[in-house]
Image (cartoon, rainbow, N blue to C red; front, top):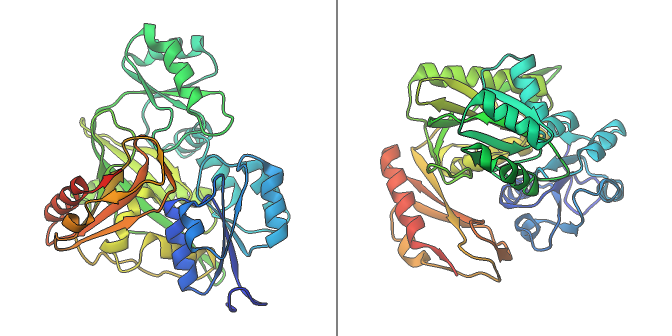
Length: 398
């Protein structure tokens, strides 16, 4: 392994397809490793572009645009950060010899909820919620009848709660179906209908793979716990370590290792596990990249999920990731749509001992857009959570 100087002959290059806040942290870690970074997204001034050597703005669903950039830059590694991307182009590029992280198949499967559910529940026999697939309103009605109300609709191409619709009676089926498809990422025209379960706890098991000689090592970071308010489908807060029994944690880790080894490749995956109020431990979904709940690892572990991802992408090892302190993270959300937002309240928030703030630098907002995150450490998880919540409540997006 040789790493040359960025912008000179012999440099190592990574190209980020998607340049949001997770990509920004990946870019920072790559910069620390002396790697040249190219950031690509659908809009200019995306967070990772602030810390990249070069940036490009393209339609991320245009496969020809993606291939043209990769052929121009010839990166050593292509790393995806978003769901709304042309995955067929990644498959073609991989066939031409480019390295896609974790691999093109994993990105394609993880970004399609139907294919992912088939893989997890039907091939690997992991426990999940009961589900049906549907292509039209009549299919949805039949599925809701079998599952019972309420039931949850999710578009085929979805992430972070986009397009998730709760249906509580037959009169809402058609509207819910249209709403789910309207918020789908990409061109998927099908939905998944799932039984609605009451969630007690949620876990993210960050699971990563890296090469070691002729072998591949699969390892996990101690699971992260997170929780969302009732009816909210996007990430709000997470904490480390998870506060639940070791038997549940080991079961969750076992599910994560099984699906990550099936998906293969190198890099980190965020595997989401649900623990229901009636005691079931269920596989939910997996992201082929660092996970938003894993932002807490910026302060909770000796090596963050972002550094693990960069190391693995470059073919370098990470033998162990250790928890060094109880910690929590809480998002900072925008309330309205606007350009050139301003953040206030930092003076008061940063008076709280053990609190740090990461502002993502996004150029525009919309309702409930994630604009930053509060990170807090404490002697206990509860103390860290209270600090993070208090600090987040003081910070406003204007």
